[in-house]
Image (cartoon, rainbow, N blue to C red; front, side, top):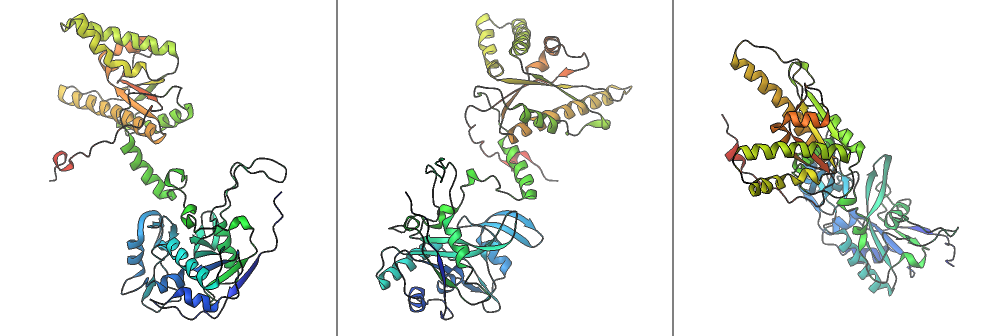
Length: 441
């Protein structure tokens, strides 16, 4: 049985002199630290680490420094930027600081906080003759959905920055499935109770942790606390999420020809359809209709009718039986899709013109509106993580498609969209030469 935890003590480290570039921070800490014991954790502000490493810059504005340290803007409101730094940390202003430095100076985070923690741990272990000693480098950060700031671990050595308790049992014997305490951040927050910018105490010692909180080696560091991008459900701020999501969905819209088994989420399809009917339309009309083909019987009826019409056209064109069969096999993408959507154009509200020129333009305007609705559907499906393929066959046999689905005579099928979960990620689209496709006047 694991013994109950004992008391934890947090001791401020006072007497540390002002740190300048090139100072031996390990030696300065060693001179100021109290007597250390096996299992102690020394918690140091990133500010003094950065000063010693020469990360203070003059002649650079804070905004310029933030831009230089940023790899991704997560959210922006007015002059405030929440960004991802080169370290993978998401912080306001990239952790760039102007407090407790000379006027006209900005202070960046250490270049590699985990490496800084490892160096300090090695120096202190050697000078104090200790085996199990932890070091945590901290910085101040806000938290989403929470007011105020607290210190977090940006560097660590010799400490389980992330204490994985999954698979162990609680006091009632239940298996823990998701329990993953951020011990590095808890140590940073505890140490901040006795240190801080206003008091001029940049370091503390946390004593009394359980033996399993310390490591024999340096360990993975605070990098273990950075959530991988593919697990990040909140990767963007609200406005940025809308913009990034829209751009990502447009780029993700690819023709998918192979689908995984099983029907797509009907709510996701419904959301995509709701997005499709927001496309632009002429004369304040609603020119789109969508026939959603869910049942196997309706799908077979539709596809058999379209195939028969296609085969008849090919025979009229003089193709042999073998050639007809080979061409028809190209339509297999619709047969293999778990869901079909037949977009239709309804021209109610179109203006009548006495001449052919304007009548043709009016017709084109409505067809373009139908195409906008189809494209909106395809992009919205991609945003929902679904694959799609627009196949034009229903355009060439509208009567057969209408009859197979028992649609109103005013509905003009504009092709068929195969929908489902992609069987595999589509290959990357090669970049198209924009200067060959766009002219400027």
